[in-house]
Image (cartoon, rainbow, N blue to C red; front, side, top):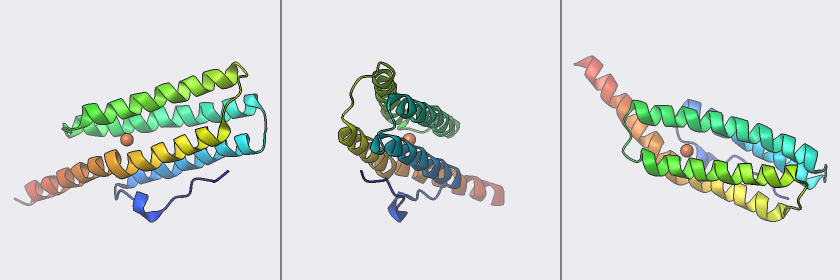
Length: 142
Ligand SMILES: [Fe+2]
């Protein structure tokens, strides 16, 4: 099963967001490892729990930044976050109930979701944050 690797195109240029994304990719890969090595639902569920907890923290940080700059696309962006969390919680529920999961499909889904979300929604947010920073810097100079 392929690990999700960080590639330069995922770099948003906002340090705190990039750090969070690297950590999220690490936790996603830790979850993939539990699937790959057939460590059983309990281990997978624990790794999924760590992933959900960090995803919630990361989304909350991004959403606080959206509020701070009154980001115009915040509703659409937040709804992507909410949908993913619902799916992760459903997956964890299946693992806790000892259900069978289609591990290649789960792995593809998570890798694709992260990559697409970062490249589309997060890049737009990062651009808005950079614009706000330069507006602040200009205001301080005048
Ligand atoms: Fe996001």
